[in-house]
Length: 166
Image (cartoon, rainbow, N blue to C red; front, top):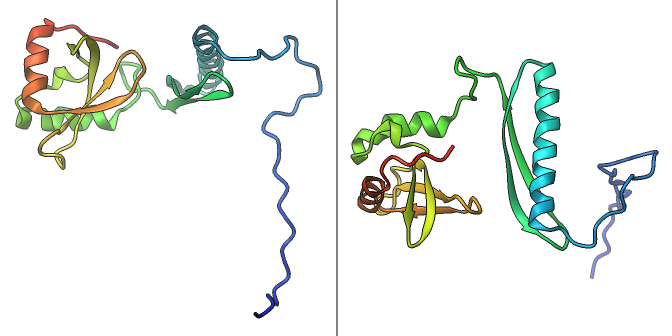
């Protein structure tokens, strides 16, 4: 067996994300709760909006992902230059508007909600590379993504009476 002639590099020290010189005002909780996660999401979104406003930008999102009530969660924000209506440009919405007619949908169906199997879903995108299940939706309760066939989405939207979930 040959010895490795290269010297082992010195390990790179990882920096802590949060460095604080003052003590926390509140001791950390033992576990996260859904109510605490939602309160944190609102507080973080407000803080991010305040910083973005200073720079003339807009913030969207604040979606919670990978929620583990024992350890933590991921949160996502999108920061950008606002359009005339104040919203951020969405490539999914633009692509949906272009492809909607080809799938017998209307561009206004983007973001519409419908109920299927007792749960509420929101139409989010069209992926033409999935001929069997081209419509991407997300479950409103937790934001989990699903794929639906066009015919099912058309029927669900007709039965939903134009319900829109922002």
